[in-house]
Every structure is written in structure tokens, then in C-alpha cells.
Length: 474
Ligand SMILES: *[C@@H]1O[C@H](CO)[C@@H](O)[C@H](O)[C@H]1NC(C)=O
Ligand SMILES: *[C@@H]1O[C@H](CO)[C@@H](O)[C@H](O)[C@H]1NC(C)=O
Ligand SMILES: *[C@@H]1O[C@H](CO)[C@@H](O)[C@H](O)[C@H]1NC(C)=O
Ligand SMILES: *[C@@H]1O[C@H](CO)[C@@H](O)[C@H](O)[C@H]1NC(C)=O
Ligand SMILES: *[C@@H]1O[C@H](CO)[C@@H](O)[C@H](O)[C@H]1NC(C)=O
Ligand SMILES: *[C@@H]1O[C@H](CO)[C@@H](O)[C@H](O)[C@H]1NC(C)=O
Image (cartoon, rainbow, N blue to C red; front, side, top):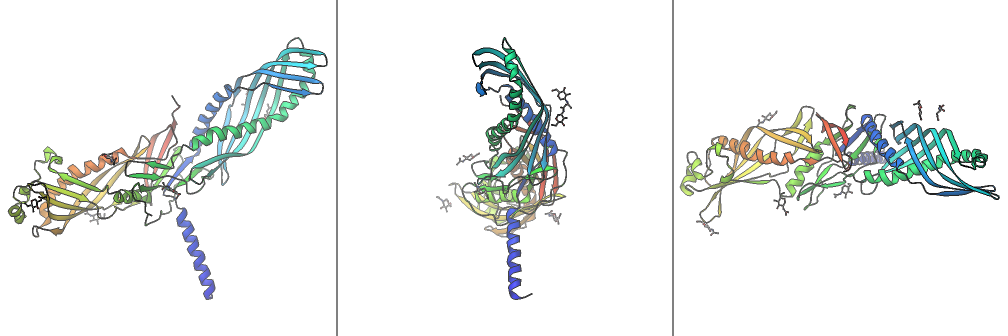
């Protein structure tokens, strides 16, 4: 290979790598056939209700010498008994409705030469089949877009009946009217489908939160990084899935890893929350200055039966007793770097490092730095989903301490082990777990509730499965 072709190959490889890493999502939403079936049921129920309330405009026309006008049009029934939504790989979702039927009645008025007179009509169209494709895309803000294509509508039976004194006259143009209806069916139905999708469905999918503010420090970016993708079994949406600090915007120093989604399909919806998603949370909270926590006397639970003052350390840090006798203390916990976790089939593995600066609180309230400890330990996490939010709780195994700095002479940190165990398990963890229990919102459309939750760990991501319930308004 010549120099030039090596350069070209490297360039192409670099480009491919850049392209492939740029498109990895931090968060994936998968809707399975079971989810599409539920969406279809809900959609059809809403559609039937809406069609039953459809107000049709008065209508007039001319056929040869015959002038006619229709008024007080009313739809007593509109049935959509069989319908199905299926994904069509790389195209979108196919919606097919079969054996639908509609009845329509109203008043009519005809004028033919010198004869004119009122009457009424009943129209029954049966065995209507409608098919169309929902095409999904994403707009520049990362929101989903939805439109229709390839619409077709046919009916095998159109029945038209007139009544009134001039029924004989009406019946003379019944054939014309029937074929007119037949011919207009497709455009009428398809235009209405396109309009409803535009006005209703598009509006509903636009309620998908692209960025969600979580608290006054961070938000999550859930914008689509690519148009939703139909596969043979599901509809997948690749989302950015990135936490950001509201105050400090900076780019994340690592990229999302590829997520190998399993072929599970029992639940209606699956969420893949990558390690990237959780690690950007760590960065965002670290940048927002939120990973700081102070422990004071008042926060020590009574059961711990010790008070946070210099006398408890006097036995093993003699200098402390000499310099700051019987003074209250305070610990300031902070993360020197953003915490970083990895996710594998065995669960979440996480060894955060916490700096603990101890202070004596002097009589004039100023703080005298005593010593700086570094604490680490294996943290295990339990994750769940509640009220549409990812919630969690942490537990820590044996903590490991080291002394980083001291203004009161060196000492054996093992002596602090039991006090630090108490502070970790009785003060720090409850505080963290209270926050994690509030959770972080999943990207859900309005009025969607989740049930039958499944939580599983895979390489680089957490798989959450759920069934969905749509909560009607009101
Ligand atoms: C189609 O609908 C009609 C009523 O409109 C019903 O009588 C018929 O059984 C249905 N056919 C099928 C195959 O479901
Ligand atoms: C209903 O329509 C379908 C397809 O449009 C057709 O195959 C079927 O024969 C029709 N059924 C009746 C009873 O007309
Ligand atoms: C941020 O929220 C916390 C609690 O949620 C509250 O105590 C604090 O005052 C808020 N800060 C600002 C600047 O709004
Ligand atoms: C969210 O991510 C998208 C895609 O990377 C980006 O265009 C958008 O600016 C981000 N929004 C926020 C609020 O960070
Ligand atoms: C508080 O007292 C200490 C020692 O008693 C002294 O060094 C320090 O300057 C005082 N601080 C203030 C703010 O008065
Ligand atoms: C954390 O877990 C790893 C592997 O599971 C082990 O090697 C290490 O000693 C543990 N650390 C602590 C502080 O328990």
C-alpha cells in the first residue's frame, strides 16, 4: 500500500469511527409489538369517539340537469373493528384497518328541471379497508415528527337509500351518487387520515420532553440523535441521554458506548439507560457544585450515641485534644472528581472517592482545618422505576480510609474506621438515598403510566422494561 492510500484509509477509518461514536445514543427507547398493539387499541378507541362526533358540512352539487344539496349530515355509527400497527423495517409503521363500516344520514333537496322537493337519505358503506404508513423522523430540535404516506382506502359495499315523496327521482341518480361516493372515498379518507395525524398525533408526539429540568442544578437532554428506526419487531428511538449542569455547559470527556439491546419483547416498552447516561449525571452534579455535603453535630442520629466534638478523637489524636479541647467539629465531604461507574451483566460497579475535611469549630465560629481523609468503598446500587422515574438506592461495603493531610500530626486512620462507618451509613447514605429516591424522569409522553417493571443489567447499560397505561384526560 502506498503512502497516499494509507492516508486515505486512515482518513476513512477516522471518519467512520467519528461517525459511529457520534451516533451512539446514551439512552434508547424501544416500543415492541405489544406496545404498538396497545397504542393501536387506544388510538382506535379515541378515533372511533372522534369520528362519532364528526360534524360534516352541508354540501351541494350538480349532476347534469340535477341540482342537489345535502344538509344535517349525521354519522350514527362508525366501526373500526379490525386494525393493526406493524413496524416495517427502515420505513415506519404500517397502520391497516379492515372491515370498517360507516353509516351516514341527512336531509337532501333536489331540483330537476321544474321539479323540486325535499327528502332524506341513508348511506351505508361497509367493508372499508384503509392502509397507510406512518413515517417517523426528527426535527432540528431532536423532537419526533410524524407524517403519513402510501395511503389507500377501498370499500366493497356502498348502500344508498332515499326516502320522501320524490324518492323515485332521487333513485334515478342513485347510481351516479354511489359511484361518486366510491370514487371519492379514497381521497376523503386519506386526506382525513393525513389531517388527523398532523393535528392530533404530531401534537401528541411533540409533547415528548426533549430536555427535562430535574432540579435547580441539572437537566437531561433526551433529544433524538437520529430518526426513530423501525425493525421487524419494534420501533427504536435513539436519544442523546445526557445530563447537563444548568450553570456550566461543557462537553463530556467520553462518548456513549454501543448498546447491544437484547431481543426481549414481552413488555410494551423498554428503556436502555447507558453508563454514559449515569456518568454524565455525575459530571453535571459535580460541575454544579452539588457533590458537597457537610456533617455537623445536629445531623448525627441519637442512636449513634456520640457527639461530634474533638474529645471523641482525643484517645488516638493527642495533638487534637491539646490544640482544640472539647470543641464541636464539622466534616465537609466532597468529590474530588466526578464519580464514574461501569455497568455489566453483574450489575453496577462503582468505587467513588470522597474527600472528608475535618474542622474544629472555634468559639468565634471560624473553622480550623484538622485533617483530610480520603474515603472509598465498593458501592452497590439497586435500581427501580416508580411513577415514570428511575429511582435508586445505594449501599456501601467496607469503606477504606487514607490520610491525605493533617494539621494535627499523623495518626492511624484505622482508629477512625468505626466513626466513619457510622457517618457513612447513618448520615451520608440516607442523604444520598433520599435524593435518589426522588428519581430522575424517564422520557415519556404526557399521561403515560408504567407498570410491571423489569430491571436488568447488560454490558454498558441498564435495561428497564414496562407495560404502559394511557391515562385519559380528566
Ligand atoms: C365485517 O363487519 C360486518 C358488520 O359490518 C360483520 O357482519 C362481519 O361479520 C365482519 N366480517 C369479518 C370477517 O369480521
Ligand atoms: C371485503 O374487502 C376485502 C378487501 O378489500 C375483500 O377481499 C373481501 O372480499 C370483501 N368482503 C366482502 C364480504 O365483500
Ligand atoms: C435549589 O433547590 C433546593 C432544594 O430543592 C433549595 O433548597 C434551594 O434554595 C434552591 N436554590 C435556588 C437558587 O433556587
Ligand atoms: C441537546 O442535544 C442536542 C443534540 O446534541 C443539541 O442540539 C441541543 O442543543 C442539546 N440541548 C441542550 C439543552 O443541551
Ligand atoms: C477566631 O479565633 C481564632 C483563634 O482564637 C483567630 O485566629 C481567628 O482570627 C478568629 N477569627 C475571626 C474571624 O475573628
Ligand atoms: C471492591 O471490589 C473489588 C472487586 O470486587 C475488590 O478487589 C476490592 O478489594 C473491593 N474494595 C473494597 C474496599 O472492599
